[in-house]
Image (cartoon, rainbow, N blue to C red; front, side, top):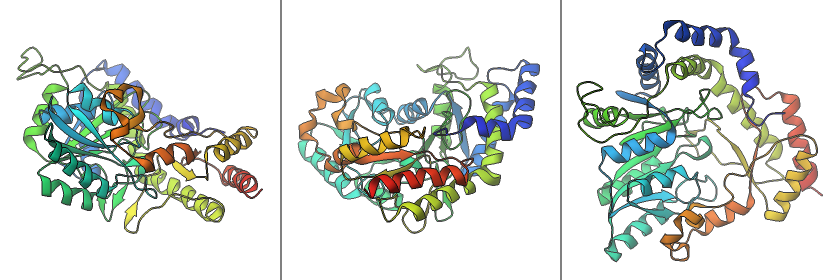
Amino acid sequence: MQFRDLKAQYTALKDEMDKAILEVVASSAYVMGPKIKEMETAFADYVGVKHCVACNSGTDALLLALKAWDVTAGDAVFVPSFTFFASAEVIAMQGATPVFVDVDKDTFNMDVADLEHKIEQTKKAGKLTPRVIIAVDLFGLPADFMAVRKVAEKHGLYVLEDGAQGFGGRIGEQKACTFGDISTTSFFPAKPVGCYGDGGAVFTNNDKWAELMDSYHIHGKGSDRYDNIRIGMNSRMDSIQAAILLVKLKAFKEYELADVNKVAARYTEKLKDVVKTPIVPEGFYSSWAQYTIQVGNKEIRTGLQAALKALDIPTAIYYPIPMHRQTAFNYLNPNENQCPVSDKLADTVLSLPIHPYLSEKEQDMICETVCSFLRK
């Protein structure tokens, strides 16, 4: 059994996928070829924004957004502690200071009350200038952007949506990757829509920021690639990856997003009486990058993982060390920036296999094993 079965997906898409890849190979337009613009247009149209700039990774996408806003030393950027390292790493890469915000125990997304507290705390200290809120769509569920935006507007901050795991999610009819002043996603292979390597994109309706990010991601180019008007980076997407993403986006729209939601609903129905299952608030729709349950403590989790592994059922822990306790951020003094919910989740969460190609037989096997272990 696979945690995220990319082989099954390739088998289902093989004819279209092979054709798309070979067309790029035959064209010899491997870097910044016409497939890039085609892909950018398709993804911008899907989420509903004016601009999509394809880049080399979800991490680079976040970095490009911060560069467009000239985030730098002396600036404070507010980011959840319970997320992947890249969400905070890019802040430090720009010389700014990450301020870690705790998360909601049910949705895993940014706790807006703690966000407000951390902003006020930062302002009172007077050492940093609050600039940006990075709200993460963790595990496929959009953050509570209505509440986040109220806080941002009150304090005059930009909102950066980290939709690395959220692509395909919605609040009402509005899709993920449209909630930020700039939004980003990742096309890492295991993401809701992934390529066959690294890839990412930024989304915005702001013409100026789109132009800046387009420049920054190709060595700070001006009128052409040999006219460099700012210090940029090499973050181009390869044409083959763009071709792959066009095939996958079609499948995602036609059936994959609906099918993965069916798997999640079936999991929840079978597991809700024995374990804490993920919460999707009313009006929200998840793309289920992960299906993450919560157990009582680390010892129970270790035992459950072992029981599942004995039957060749893979699991994963996202994330065993919250951001405020990462060694790289020791200089920020983790004891001064408390995130108790993030600390608890690090010891109690466990992600189960989930993808659109997971059979009902496999789902039943997973659920029966979880229920059997936890009922003992």
